[in-house]
Amino acid sequence: MTNFDDELRTLRAQAARKKQLHAMLDALYARRGELEARERELSAVRAAEQKDVDRLEGRSLAALFYSVLGRKDEQLDKEQQEAYAAAVKHDSAVRELEAVRQDIARYESELSTLEGCEARYEQVLADKREALKASGARQAERILQLEQEIAAQGAQAREIEEAIDAGRTARDTAESILASLHSAGNWGTFDMFGGGLVADLAKHSHLDSAQDQIETLQIQLSRFRTELSDVTIQADIQAQVDGFLRFADYFFDGLFVDWMVLDRIQQSQAQVENTAGQIKGVLRRLYGMQDACRAARQKAQDELDALVLAS
Image (cartoon, rainbow, N blue to C red; front, side):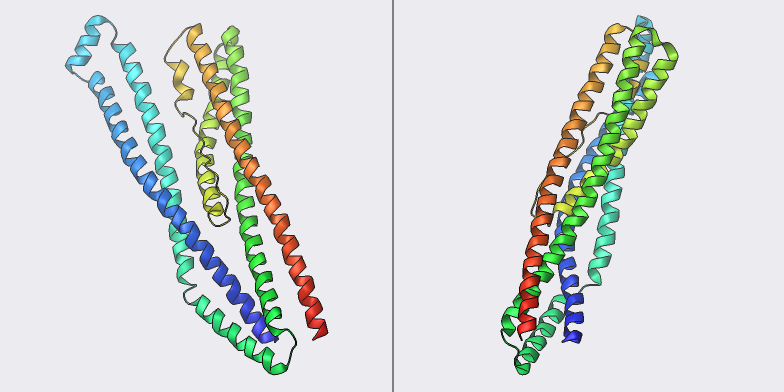
């Protein structure tokens, strides 16, 4: 039966992977649609905000009006902030959309190589069933059932492991973001009490790092959700941290604004901590599923071994 077993093992793995790919692609197609709509929306906002900046920098009536009032620089700074915020959010959406498109292309290519594997599996299984009956092996049907159960548990274990790997990656990034925000908060407090340019630059350096990692985390969370799509576990986790943070006190002076920036840092920390907590909660559930899967597989393997020995 060795020839049957080797071929069945390969075909089972292919069929399980095909099912997994279909589930992940369904999730990715939905995510692509959401991101395409979001990208169009943010692109329009970005263009509108930049138009406001261009209007004030040019020879428009609005520029003349604010110039006469002596508030042109103040208004221009405000418009530049809003334009930058819109650009950051749009760029982040574009990067996530591109990552999703790349994942779709990769999975569709892999899926095309698995065409017809289920039918081949059923045919080889039927051939083995007939061979077992012809050999006079006792409880032939139970042996086949146990082999299928072991294979199914093995496929599930692989899917869970892939989801765990994706979750761990996202968790590590979230913890790195928290470290950056914590350092930014410390420098921000120091800056309020006379830290000067050094403290200001250090604070914004840590905020820059947090912003870059947030964009990475959003992509990782999207992939984590994709991996979860066929593990019968759902997690609506999305990092929502405003990339506009780092420029807030470059454009305004005063103690109140510094307090506001610190408050924004603390709000961002709370959001990332919540996201990290959700990731860890899903990971705990996955670890429990992994243990149960291993136990079920071992139980079926023990029964199969006993039947084979007795045959």
